Length: 317
Image (cartoon, rainbow, N blue to C red; front, side, top):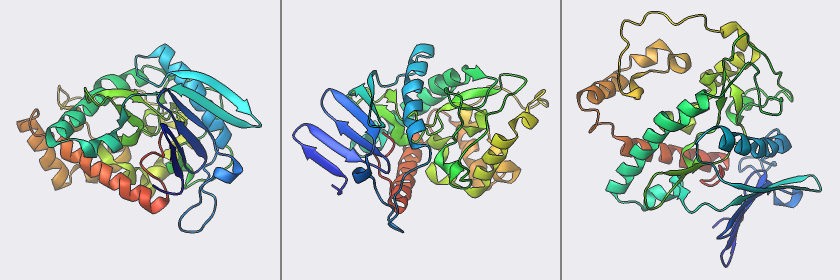
């Protein structure tokens, strides 16, 4: 255990950069950290607070209600919102499962394969389709303000982002942090019990929903990708799509075959390693997806990334 985690019987308390968590058998409480509870960055000793501290926790309150009313996506049940001395606090009904990042390493190879397949099925068949049905002509969070996720604001620290409108409802609801540790997994069925940590969610161009489940956290922080997202946020109306053309190669394929050219470009799509993986997928899609090893690799990258930058596997809760 670190200095930031304390256990007292059935109660576990934990704090991250600017959040304080309490876990009991029946409740999960998440609130803004008070001054004496903040964490400090390992490399310079400064407070590790993220931007838009107050707005983020209010946005999660609004998002949980919005998602539960408008989709079938499983989210924690919000029991109470309180505000004492400027400290926003969310109280949820406790979830019985564990985060994928915690549970995965306790599973045998068969269990790891099952949970990997279940995750990919949930993301591609439930989560993304339902989120993309939620559309708006206005960019930003539900309250009307705009704050992108940290991978964007790390390259652009402006104190305020402008909301914009489009001639069409091109903005879709994005979670904006679908890191593997933000999926709670039922320990018996190994299926997704809930998607957690909706602080950065809102209506954004669909390109903002980074595919952590296939690419991992490290790739989401690459400067080229982040600056593309900044440009998209600054002038999204200039990228309104009139039509999609050239459907010669279209058809029914595994979803992994749809390469994200908008994020990685043509050269990356032609890399030998990627192409050979797609060939294997086409020859035996049910047996060669290798989702288990992919999830394991992403978790390892995520763990190392968190260790370097002062995060932990529970930072996303």
